[in-house]
Image 1 (cartoon, rainbow, N blue to C red):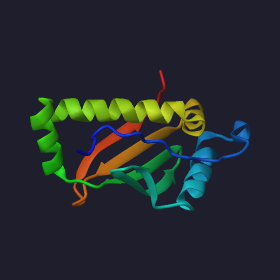
Image 2 (image 1 turned 30 degrees about the horizontal axis):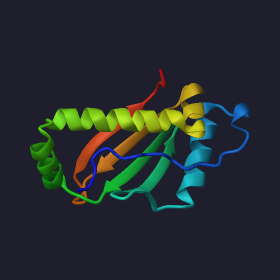
Image 3 (image 1 turned 180 degrees about the horizontal axis):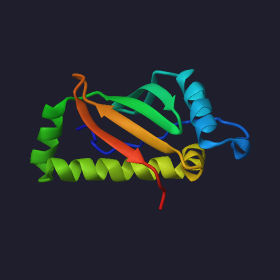
Image 4 (image 1 turned 180 degrees about the vertical axis):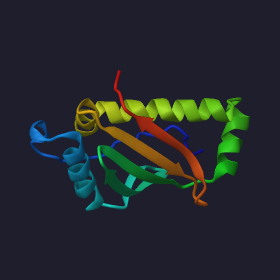
Length: 133
């Protein structure tokens, strides 16, 4: 069974971000990550696009399953869709805040947004992280 909660970490190598503002850092991170796309993030998820919009880093991740799979997992676990999405958002925030580069962007006043899509292109959820507190 594929897991719903997955490790979502941007593997970045941005240098000398201490002298950057959030807009500059988001732009540099997006440029660096884009070089290696698509990028497998977990067994069931692929990072397909990254862009900077001001101080926001926006990432698009494609799941290898559809909503029907999520429904099957919910039936087996007894979780509601909301519980699954809250757990997904909690894991995403934890991963973003434990990565030095994405945490540095947030600490500079930036924001990291992940948009997760099912395999059929339908939006699964969007997670926005503006604070690591």
